[in-house]
Amino acid sequence: MTQDYFKANQIKNIDYKDIEILKKFLNPHGRINSRKRTGLSATHQRMLAQAIKRARYMALLPFIIK
Image (tube, rainbow, N blue to C red):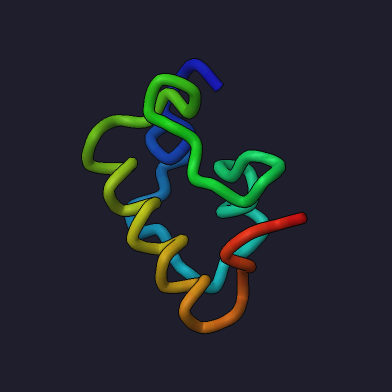
């Protein structure tokens, strides 16, 4: 993903309940990919990290994948 995904799709708010989008930014082990790999802006990367952490806390996403 070279271009900012959220900017390209005009997504203003990243929702923690939208699991399909959040899964795109996790590696096979369940970790959040870096900005270099995702191509997101710093603002969107912070919003993404917060949404993923909320989804994990609400048990929508796993903390680790074995």
